Length: 109
Image (cartoon, rainbow, N blue to C red):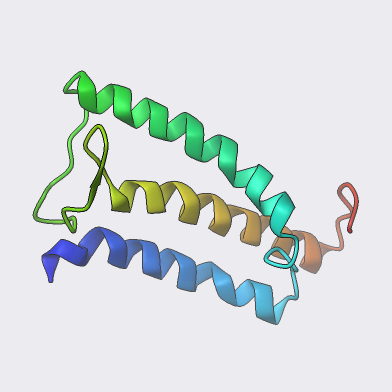
């Protein structure tokens, strides 16, 4: 079960923020293109950074806490999931605060 520890943390992160989409009607998931262009730069930059750090021996992952599914360069699946889940949770949280506070930021379409 320890092999799923990292994915478990990602699941709790999603569960901790996805309810905001439903309860506060943030409509983050309905605006898919905006979400993609928000997350994709983060994903690319941090995947490149991690690959560099792994190649240089500066960064490692505990194989007992990951599933063992590796992308080229030794990047674990869980790390890629992290780079999607954390920005998603951040956007959901920001949009929830905007909804509750009535903040008008940019277009709403």
